[in-house]
Amino acid sequence: MAHESTTVPTFSKHAMVLDSPEPPSVWKEVTGTVKNVLVPRDNKPFSPSCFLTACIKGLFPVLQWGRNYNLKSFRSDFMAGLTLASLGIPQSIGYANLAKLDPQYGLYTSVVPPLIYAVMGSSREIAIGPVAVVSLLLSSMIQKVVDPTVDVDTYHKLVFTVTFLTGIFQASFGLLRLGFLVDLLSHAAIVGFMAGAAIVIGMQQLKGLLGLSHFTNSTDVVSVIKAVSSAVHQPWHSGNFLIGCSFLILILITRFIARKNKKFFWLSAIAPLLSVVLSTLIVFITRSDKHGVKIIQHVHGGLNPSSAKQIQLTQPYVVECTKIALVCGVIALTEAIAVGRSFASVRGYRLDGNKEMMAMGFMNVAGSLSSCYVATGSFSRSAVNFSAGCKTAVSNIVMAATVFLALQLFTRLLYYTPVAILASIILSALPGLIDYKAAMSIWKVDKMDFLICMGTFLGVLFGSVEIGLSIAIIISFAKIVIRAIRPSMEVLGRIEGTEIFCSIRQYPMAIPTPSVFLMRVDCSFLCFMNANFIRERIIRWVTEECDTMKEKTGDKLQSIIIDMSNVMNIDTSGLATLEEIHKELVFLNLQVAIANPSWTVIHKMKIAGLTGPIGGDWIFLTVADAMQACLSFKRDSV
Image (cartoon, rainbow, N blue to C red; front, side, top):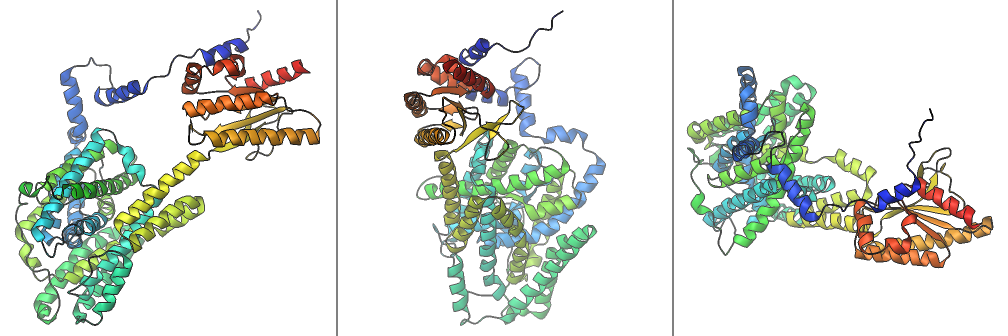
């Protein structure tokens, strides 16, 4: 019995290309996405109760993993939570000082947001609380609207309003699946931003480390250097510097030991709290506060007071608060999701970015109503949480409960805590923000990305946080626009003995086919931005190829194949350009073939009536089919 050939006849391949159904409209794609999000993905019949149950389970992951929670996991989470609190309490106080707030606000922020995140978040390792970069963002941007040293009450109101709006933005990003907004800041931009912010934060701590009474509110390095230079002529007390540097060295030594031996991770975790206790005891015994050592004095304890009435959503500051909240929301989400994904990859599970956004949003909204400022995931505390062996987000609950007990019982003991120790704790956390290895890798891999990294870094360092972020976004979009305007185009050749066609530049062994010029357009969208560039490049290449072939062999170029497999979409300018290219090449007495146009491209070509002038017989499913037809055309025309 004869074996039937499985090769699809040429006419049927043309039919497959030209007679494909219409692609789905934008409206169908949007509604399909919403349906996939809202409707449960199982075979059960849809009902309101099933939908509600699925929504509740999606909103509160604790309902899923909590069913299998056991005493063994709790033991691990309990120890991790206590270790986390020993690091989080002194850091929270220090970051509140960085945000130009009283110490208790940092502690408040380590109580409510972690509790909300524990039941709504999808990460097991993230430790929630105030962080250095967001604290700097708040203080540097809000103090341009209201000076905290002049009008403390209004400053507090703006902080709570920004926190509330930040939560609204973050929750909206998650509900509307707008996670791509977080990706507006590329990896290179984040590396540069974090490094610049770390240096700015470090220089801001010179005020506390030197015990200066007057210091600049500006964050750029030039203003800080001028402030330090002028402070040399002011009276300052060496006791502040001595205490700060001594305990900074102690914290760094314990961190070095912990890195060398992972068993001693707890040593670096408790070092900040131990430093606070010892320095406070030293100041109390020696009464150094009477001799120029600055202390934090009163820290209000007790339950988080309500701040709902302080949120101002009316003029005159609502526009400024909205702008600040959007920046803070994106930066906080970027840091938290980056931290969560890094630990999730180690543990081998997937982090749901949209759930994280909703969890972050709800916790900041709740925090804004309970005297908290913007909270997010901290890399340093999350690393401690991971090293301490946490199993679930219950470690955040244990940490929050410990901080709450500290607010109830121990805030009076912080009266004599020196301000310099807070500066040293913040300084000890900054080296982790400067990732010079990543910057070197970016330089080696992509020079344009390195330009984004350095532009952001220098913008934050010599300008402001807003300038640095603006530079990052402007250069990133410029990079996208440049690559869209000038897309890559390749001349293709055949790998000998195969039907594989690839770039001659990338694979020198690829052989061009005589009398047939094959090229590929490497852009996903053939549109008004790049249509003219593509037309000029194709015509110039074809003209040069005609001249070269005539000089070398005396033969004529007879066919042109345009591989459009990478062109996913086309607009009216692209269609007009495609028609112009066809006319110009036909005028040069060349046969034009198009290979593998996408679903959308062929649909728009049919609507625009472009398949007629080009010829349906010269639109092919594969490059190999187009090449075979062009070679046959050559033989027929000879």
